[in-house]
Image (cartoon, rainbow, N blue to C red):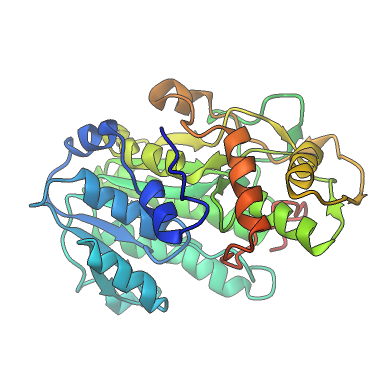
Length: 343
């Protein structure tokens, strides 16, 4: 895909790029009918995912974006692009009856940061609320965003966990993500709900993600911890494209599970060094690369949907340009270097 020249100078140009669907998205969505409901649409991925849906679908198919919408600017922007926004606190059991019916559902609800200090909220959001969603939209094809955190750490040279690797979540967040998956697995088995589970780690764009985290630390003169010596990343537009196309693979009684990330096992030290060189900053490293890291193997995803259209090299250059120019950050660090599951 051609990357727009002004993407690193305008958030609107960036969002326009991140929400550009491939022709394959429309073809996949044609396997469904009726309105599309996006649950948890107000997070990092949701707004541009909703815009991509709107651009890929025929005008007579509605896109409903459900969130608390504490970010009123994001809501107004989505509505200006033809997405119908619905305000709802999805943590409340009574909120679900009033939501619109759907022909397809994308589930993006989740809670990560603060899971160590407020574990009951994390378990409620990641383990209980999925049950509300699965019951409300029983029988409706559903793509569920999950996380590669459900896997155990593996040797950095081993290529990462495939979808067949036994899960081994560490900590409250990862364990509750697996509970989310099990809620929808129950719906697939009990109500014949077609389900696809998308285990993503980590999406990146200019305002957040592993690369932006590293670049921000470099600009601030902070040391880079390389104990988590390797990481997977994927450009968010590619990831969103894949997740939308995943709807045609949703199935029952067993969900279809797919890892979503880039093809590289990327060295944290190398990524930081590349960013440091582009930003013309000296680097300080701390720690020593551990032999194991949280890594996923996305070969199945690339076999279905192809390799990312935006390469890791392009992403590094774009992030360095954006951060170096003082571009806005979302302030939502990935904390990808966390090794004890305490977010």
